[in-house]
Image (cartoon, rainbow, N blue to C red):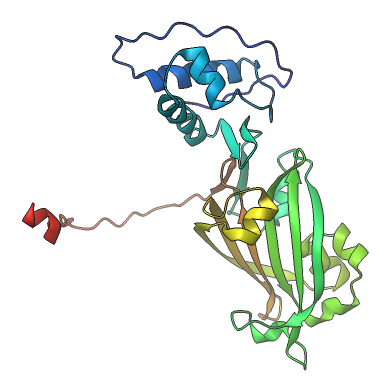
Length: 276
């Protein structure tokens, strides 16, 4: 199912077309296709709530299992998002983070015409964790910790936990609230950032992060770990961005030449398979 531009003003959703129960196309796929059509036609507003599972079972005359399969298909296609305890909603704009150039998370959103809102949760001196480079700490082995929520359309999309140099002690809460991380480093601390190493992985949200992002503890997150360096080659910041994955993706282009292995090896049968 392809994402297309869709109107932002909703219109009344049409009555459900009869399902073709003798069709080779599964019932859940037919339902997913109808709902996708309704979403793309603007019958449901962006960020608008879809009918409940019960309402859809009545509308289409199918079981809850079939409805859940249809909703999972829409979720996989990035057309909807699920909010714990609230229901299923039409997804917003697909957001992208281009890894070809060094760009901050906030600035990457601005570059796409998005107007993000941020909420600073924590900005204080802390003891340097073991995984953070010692060059960030002062004589007392403390650095500055920043935690911030990013929102789009009033909904949280990401949270960052960042460790900044001890010199950030001269930055006020107000200044930290009004500047992205790279803005704090370059504008306020006069540090020139020359490069960054980025690692991306997936992990469960967990209780604390899930609560901040409106997710259950087992919900999957994208995690972008970033370590930025100054002109002197020392680490200037260490950040972890916890990102809701439904409408976010990373872009990276690779160029050849392309090395190709001479052959591939098939997997051996597991012990369980051998005994079956």
